[in-house]
Image (cartoon, rainbow, N blue to C red):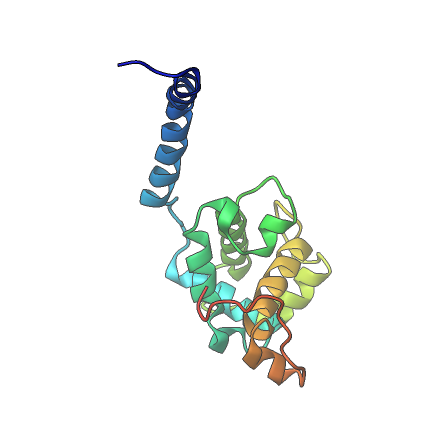
Length: 174
């Protein structure tokens, strides 16, 4: 069997590139097959939900927690969350796990937390014994993600009395 020079170069290039393509395909497949674990308890999700509702009224009924859980199940580079766009050296999962830990600590053993008072303290970085990233950063990111879910849809735009003018219409469920 004889090859032309062109066929020889094409097949040689395919052989040279194949390992890189297969490795990339394997990483993609494995990252989807084994998403990172989200170590946030149902009680912590409830705290995040109460805080989000205090910051962005309507976020509970708009499904913010379900949205966060779906986005955190994605690879970090695909999550449609504000923390990704800020360029922080933390993954979205680590960010929200940090928030969950801080809210659990702020609860300080009591059965409930005053989400309205807590969100006001977070906005001014005046939460007692807060550790790690600034409370105001968590407040900003949660507010941004909450606003996306509540107002970033045709129905949300109507709540504001605005026409929905998306360049590209989003899918119904993200």
